[in-house]
Image 1 (cartoon, rainbow, N blue to C red):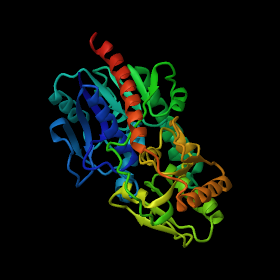
Image 2 (cartoon, rainbow, N blue to C red):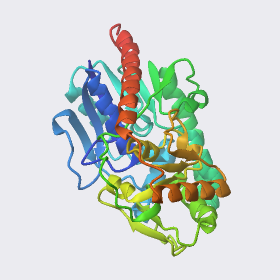
Image 3 (cartoon, rainbow, N blue to C red):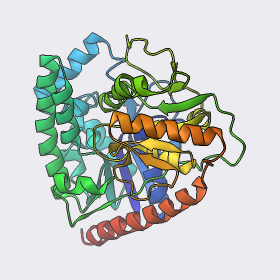
Length: 390
């Protein structure tokens, strides 16, 4: 079976963001199922495509809002208003419909598409109607946009997010209705997408097996890593800094890795902002206990999965555990600031005295791979049944 994996960003270099990690994991799963996969999409500037023989690159684009100039943001806004499409899809209209059609024709005959999230699929809906497809819903995007609108303080941003939510709801409905099968990343996402009974939740893993087993040398009592410029992540970070950190013991140290928004203020002296780190797993292993602080959003938290695959102890909010049924024994759930601070202090104390060992994360990962392969197999069976009748 030859599939085209349609995605906004193609794999190019080691995956960094949660979106890139999820994409590579899904591509790897399709390949394990025996599919030949051609990836179609854009790449970030300055990166090298990871698998050029099986990738069709539509061009280079930096889709990040925080690095875009005012002129670029205005151009994206004009495109979304002019085309009646979402802001995320408008960013990808740097090429035309004929460019996409030419790229698809160059790939040759295929059995179907895997439409990976809404961005590229929404930018060129008509071009991807020619073959049966599986739709991968990384999140319930319209709910995420609505949450962003509710949390926005700028009236203009609030208006734009509500508009985005309205457009995304209609787009996700069309993509789901026309899909042969839908893969969500969390069971909870099936109902708001309207796909209960014709979808399965896809258990994800990180693309590479985690290191571990060796003695850890810790630099921080607790740590967290993420792309903090993304609104849902920033909400969790602000909650942790403003409500949890003041309740922690005076000598507890906190390391925060990942890019923060411009002008993000310095906080408690116990908190050290490290920016982008070269090796995310190495950073996590330097933290006695991981803090997983998601407060909103849909889909699954890849940083939670990475922590569990490494066997590291953690304190996690309910949102951080969304879509993950198999919670390791060294992970505590806490949703209020008081509960989180208390659980964090307890685990740090136990880790310091050696009473809280790391777990076998490799076994955890292997179990999830087996579950993931079963779900992908079912999705491809549904797609094959339809593509064989076209």
